[in-house]
Image (tube, rainbow, N blue to C red; front, side, top):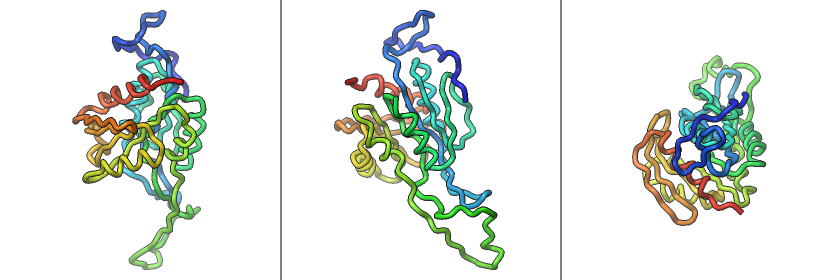
Amino acid sequence: MTRAAEPPTNDHADRAPDARGRRRARRQLRVVVTAGPTREHIDPVRYLSNESSGRMGFAIAAEASRRGHRVALVSGPVNLPTPPGVRRIDVESARDMLVAVQRAFRGADALYMAAAVADWRPARRLSGKWRAKDGGAARAKIELVKNPDVLATVARGKGPRIVVGFALETGNGERRARSKMMKKGLDYVVLNDASALNATTSSATLIGRDGTRQVLPQKKKQQLARVLVDLAETWPRT
């Protein structure tokens, strides 16, 4: 994928205009965003995946680019157009995503890990079509092995840079979201529920490692993205 020649116009009042009059952030950041699901193949035609549409991650990437930041978007398989000005890196499996995010984050200032990465994958990918039913079996088993934890692995080497994770939980998941944030070394975690999957809107709770908590009522994902990009722009630089 190629980068668009010019990021789109930014009309935020607190941004400084560039020589052409476009509104830009006062300091250009290098932002990495992940989006969408991963696929873990059983055989050439079947795979394990989830319902993530990628819309939240794409909205974050679009908003960051709109403000004049340099954005790398690492995306699982989704049917969404690349936002203007964004460098897109397409991946398929969790292991593919880990390699791509590690490479993209080396020189970056911020990471938004909005992808829904598969926790498990088949222990063995069959070279041909899986034909368990041909033997007349009423049941079949697939042995699974744990995937690398992309977010925890990358966050370990983040240093002073900001890392924002996402936690999709059912029921009262705030305790689990806080635990995820602390265990994985995140600066913020965005908590939402299953209604956010494959939807254009979402409600969320933004939880900070510093003890902050902000409830974000039902909004378009583009509106939520504005709040989230603000986090990187106000993050203290060392």
